[in-house]
Length: 304
Image (cartoon, helix red, strand yellow):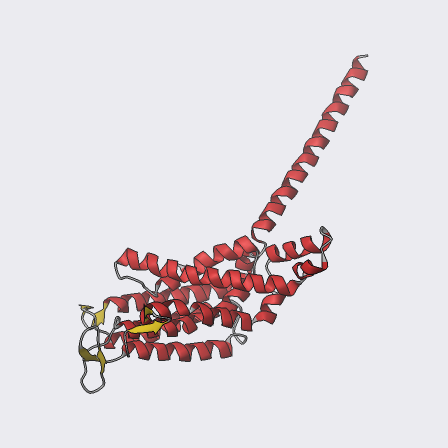
């Protein structure tokens, strides 16, 4: 495959194009779940919609601001952008931490917790949203691995029998990037098929376990230094990914409802609780003041 894509007289690296292109399949996948997203609209979007319905007398040209369908699409686009940049952020942080460059395992270690914060801010059900968003991860993995294949990075061990020519190393190597892209496709189909059959919130931990297990196998074919017998550096990441996935699965199955109860009310719910507490305090203070006034009056009468 040629290293560069020529478009409108400009030269682009295939790696750069495919590495950023996975935003669109994520967006398409999220839009395909429009009806489910509409049923689980965030507290923030619902409040904005109700605000336009009740408070404003809109011109006919702006009636779309009153519709739930419009805010569903806005929310899908916002969360797709958030998901895209969160993947970049989490992979970059882990890559910098372990000096490995862009690291897909960052998604397992950081992504769920970064996303939980956004769910809390918007007031979304974390279990349902996690299940809706999880199949897009193996979908994005396909494009990331195709980008690696085009760049010649993350390549396999040398093999004249089963290898393909890698222009980056000028050698015949096993195309492990295509194998991992194939695993991504299989995992996407599998997770999409079973996403409604599992307990809410368990799909992402399951993907963490399955991806780590498949990557553990394919890692033997990658051109990396062995650090512990036949094991390479990323084998350690794979073992950590499996352990983290199992822990996440146990936590979600046991404490899923508590997590939902804490996250779903969101920032708006927290503000409303604080307002209620302040009102109650004001009422109790008023009652206390009235009691003190009555006591003082009674004391004055007795003295008289």
